[in-house]
Length: 366
Image (tube, rainbow, N blue to C red; front, top):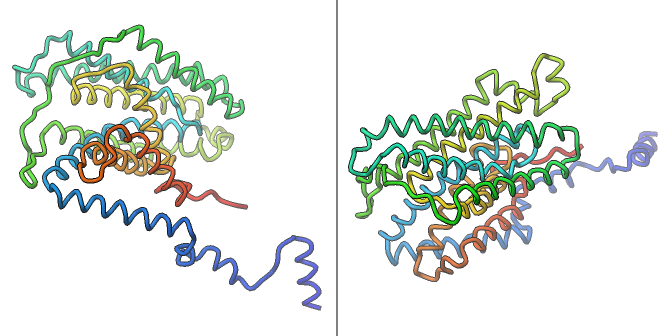
C-alpha cells in the first residue's frame, strides 16, 4: 500500500521521491569543483598567478607602484559603483545616467574651484575651507539632478515593464551626455593640483602619497556611511521594506515614492562628492570620460554582486588593479590597447563561474 501511495504521489507532482542522494550530489561544492568550467577557471587562475609572480620577480618596485595606482583608481570607480548599487536597490534597475551625474560633479567642481582662485602655492589646509564649501554645493546640485531624473524619468514608469524603464534610462544618459558636451565643448576642464603629494609611507622604495590615501579613505568613509544608513536608520529600513514588498510597506506607513526619491538624492550627492575627488586627483576632466567611467562602474557592480555594497567595492578594486597591471606590466603584458578587453574578459569568466557575482545571493527557486 505504501509503495502504491508513493507512486501515486510521484505521478501527481511529477517529481521522484528518491533518496536525497541526487540532491546532495547536485549541491555538493566538492563535486562542483570537477565540472569543466571550474577546471578551466582553475587553470586560467593559475596562469594569471604565474603572470603576476613573474612580474613581481622582474621588478618588485614596479609591481608595488602599479598596485598603489590600481587600488586608488579602484577606489574612484567604487564611488560611482556604490551609487549604482543604491539606485538599483531602490527601483530594481541600474540607473545608467548616474555615471554622467558623477562627471557633471567633476566638471562643476573644476569650474567652481577655478573660480574660487585656489592655486598650488597655498597649502592644502589653507585651501580646505573653500574645497569643503564647493563640495557642499556640488553634492547638493548633483543630488537634486539625480532626484529630478527619478521624478521625471522613472516615477511615471514605476508600473511599466522593466524594458521601458531601461530605454528611458538610456535616453536620459544621452541627454546628459549632450548637455555636458555643449557645456564643456571639446576643451577639458583643468584645475590646479590642490591635494598634498608627500609620502605617507613607502614600500620597496615606492612612496604611497597623501593624495592616494585621501581617495582611499574617502571611499571607505562613503561605504561605511552607506552601510550604517541602510542598516541602522529609518531611511534604510524604509528602503529595505519598499524593496521587499512595496505594497506591504505602504500599508505600514512607509512613503515608498519619497523613499525612492531620497535614495536617488543620496546617490547623486555621493556622485557629486566622488566627482570632486576625481577632479582633484586627476586635475583634468573631459566629457568623453563619462561613458568609460559609467561602463567600468557598471561592470564593477555586476562583478561584485548587483545588490551588495561591499561587492561593488571589491569589483571596482579588481577592475582598478587589473587595469593598472595590464597597462604597466612589462613581462608578457598585453598592453594598454587591450585593457578594456581584459577587464570585460575577467567579468565574463567570473560570471561563468558565479553568475550572481562575487557577493551576490543565489536566486531562490520555488
